[in-house]
Amino acid sequence: MGGTMSIIPSISPTDLRDYLKGQGWKMVQEAIADRLYVLNNFKHPGRQLVFPMDTDVPDFGESLGLVLEKFAIIESIPYATVLSNIADLRSDAIRFRIYGDHDFGGSLPLPFASAALEAAQKTLMASACSVLRPRPHHPRLALSEAQQLVNAAQFRHTEMGSFVLKVACPIDAVDVSTPLMPEEVETPFTRLTVLTLRRALGRLVTSIETDSLQDLIDQAKTDPLYPLSSNLCEAITHFYDDAAKNALDISFAWSGVLSAPPEPDGVIRIPREYFPRIEEVRRQLLPHERQREDMFVGTVEVLNGDMGDDGRRSGEVILALQLPEGEIVRARVTLLADDYSKADRAHMSEGTYVKVVGRLNPGRQPRALTGCSLFELIYQSEAGKR
Image 1 (cartoon, helix red, strand yellow):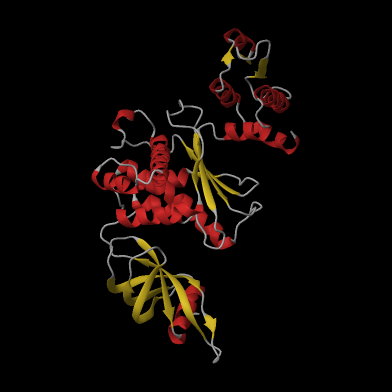
Image 2 (cartoon, rainbow, N blue to C red; image 1 turned 30 degrees about the horizontal axis):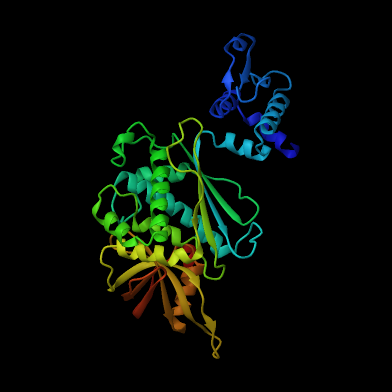
């Protein structure tokens, strides 16, 4: 067991009991009088799991550690997996595994890792919004119930071998009635959200593999309760990095306090060649995307310029622009030295925004911002002014 003993006291006797019951073990009611949980399993005759009901008894942690080790051996489950399953007993968990032709060694380039974390959050937000207001495109991922679920979700430890991002969503995070899947009105919002994600991704991958993407797109546009949205497609494409040329596996683990849903087991696998097709689905689910010329306000996210012969930098800048309808869009613009210097000041000064006039073109983010006729700082914090 090694270093895992330190987390044993955080496991409550009732949680361990509920987990074991979910694995098919049955309580011996007579043992309750002695303040003991005793469980049997007909699949393992002659074996019992026994541990105290009270946490203040001597050697409580050691007793639970021995029971957990014994259970892991009997069920042939890795000990660390048992601990992880109990930690997520009251959560549905989503596991994103990023892998490629080479071993990532449990790490990713920092920009890609940051993008993957943001993609995981947007994936959950898009699915939650589809539960609340099903539609092929959500102009804003800003519904309060969806944000409440994201705020309650937990980022678990990554796992070795490739890069694994695990998100645990507490079953009781949000209490809300939803229009999606009305036959499951008693199902918690968290479960509906994770189910929506599982079903949408399953249909998306199946449609790619059966060459029926157009049928999928048509149904998503016409069926008011269809679980797929452009926002979900966009979030999934952000799990891909051109340099890494990676693939993505997504798997689901269901909370032990609810019955597992009748969904197929196994991993949803998205090979790298699927990502361009998912991007095409995203575009087709959007309202008619057109070039728009306007004044935009936003922040400077990335500076990619080069030093010129005159000792000044110019070139590509990535902006995060807020559209009038509230959507945040990443855009790529090429700036000459004077405007690039402004962008650098905005990037380095907290609370500083830019105003830009130009043509925002359709396409995958970061979208191209061309014809830039104005680039100004419009607000600076006191720190920025100094």
